[in-house]
Length: 127
Image (cartoon, rainbow, N blue to C red; front, side, top):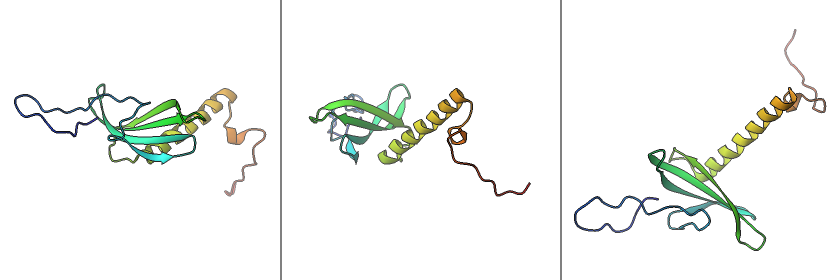
């Protein structure tokens, strides 16, 4: 997370990072809620990825138990800092749906829309 507090006076490099991210105990001064549902909440923020050596947009989704405690967390990232947290969540959601279609096609040998129980396909072109 970027450090936004007061810098120390004196010699040396200025402080650049505020610390590490704990997905189950988020620092709400660095993250804000972008999507809120009954059983989960998505938070967006900016973080530094050490492996990528660049700043990234981070979306952390916290799923809740019935008593309100955090059950699990999912983390989605993008290198485009201008993207919104809601769009990033939507892109990942659609990506996994597309991967499931490819997986089902490879297993059965035909696309799900062309299976035995699917609707007939009509063509408007003349033969």
